[in-house]
Length: 324
Image 1 (cartoon, one colour):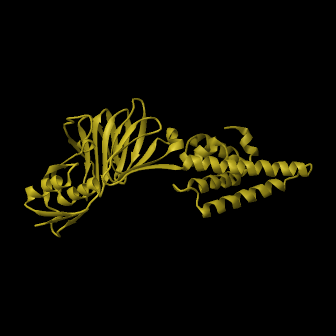
Image 2 (spheres, rainbow, N blue to C red; image 1 turned 60 degrees about the vertical axis):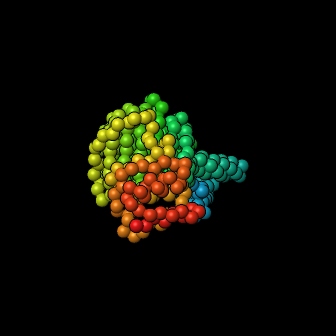
């Protein structure tokens, strides 16, 4: 740890990459802990700098909130005033201190705002979307799904957030973590599918190896042809197998097979793929369905869902009605 930090003001310390990465990502934890033990008198300065960094890092996708900016600039102003009150040879020296401090504060705001800005990609109902992560791994989003990550710091964070379903094809040697409401998936150079929706959390490994972990810290290591399945009302991870008949899941080519699935889940998928509103008669939600539908023709898709269950259907514009 550098001795120069013992002379830094809160603003200058908060502008150090070494310090910011410790505050935001807990990097260099041992080094900073040891440094703090050696310099206990610097604790107030470190805490002030930490609060400046955290104020900026709490910004959402749209940027730093008004309240956050106000708090930040109050802290910066207090720090600048403290700097200006230090003994100085003349007014030019004081002006130089103020100018340098203000410039450092502005640069810090811009730098951390860029560092914490999230990139969010959304696949709307009725569409699939393929995107490439900063390190060029490919992600295909199913309809009604999204991913979010910090674009400017993805190389260090290696974390993205998934809502819905996506297929990942990771370049060899790359690794990152996929966070979902149902659990996390840690991967290195592989291809896999993740579904996290309405209490379901399913991970299917197509090539390579992935690690799956739920909120209770239970873990499974999946290899090619293995699945981790967590259903509603069941927090445990269940290991299963499947036969990968192609390099990608069926949904990536517009096929949606189901085996003993509640009709409500089948209908939800139909709504996402065709961007329609389905009105399902009460009492039909839990009927189990085995079969498939495809994208391309709504009439055919509805027929393939309803005829095995001996149900009636009608389509008017973007509204589908299914009844007994």
